[in-house]
Length: 309
Image 1 (cartoon, rainbow, N blue to C red):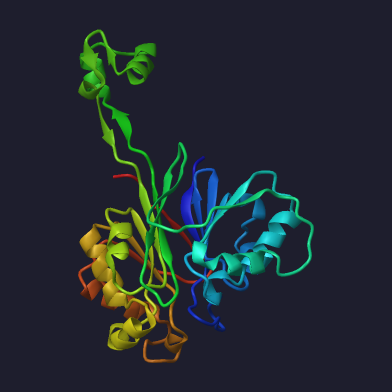
Image 2: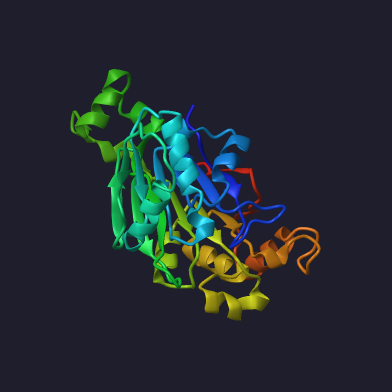
């Protein structure tokens, strides 16, 4: 059975807290696994979330601040320790090549797995597979940062009532799908386009063109909301988003499910946000106009990608 979900491994920004680990997000896309931004402690969080090294096919790093990349060393060594039998591809900003190499070879270990380095240097497609196209867009942060977007190819949905009306049944259904027409009946007459699903991952950034391009039309958007709106000046200064900004982006982009994460330690329990920061972050995202499904992420939760309409 195919599974499409995001496993939240960590949700803290800058430093881990008693309640939140450094960043880490696994996108399960049918039989593929894409690990985004493995911060410090990701290997242990994977164990707690029952995520195995064998589940990984790609690693995508948005930028080389520690809360998004310090876990690379442990994850890469675990991949080799467990002798993952398939190739794993790593995407990361090309300008941070020296950081990737230092993390990959931080200590001595035996390399047993083919880890392909595929650094990102510009906007555009990174990989095209039968299941999805992986794209990158430049973001606005004090160090070079890229967001990632996964787009499933459009398919076609057969219309049983149209097939029946035209007497097309059995093996002929497969034939018209393969050949595009049957007995003068075009495929368009008995089917409709089934829009492929879209997923985007947006971390540390100010508002910029890349944020809007990544979010456009997504079924699910996982996006940082480091600050609450009253700290918008700090967000701009340090290259981050507020909850309200994230909500507005999602509303304007037509996002179906918004996942807020990467919370500043200033909003820990007992602070002005209340017993947990979730309530105030959600309130501000809603006040900005977002009306779809919304999740304020916490460590080890699983968030299903919305089913097709």
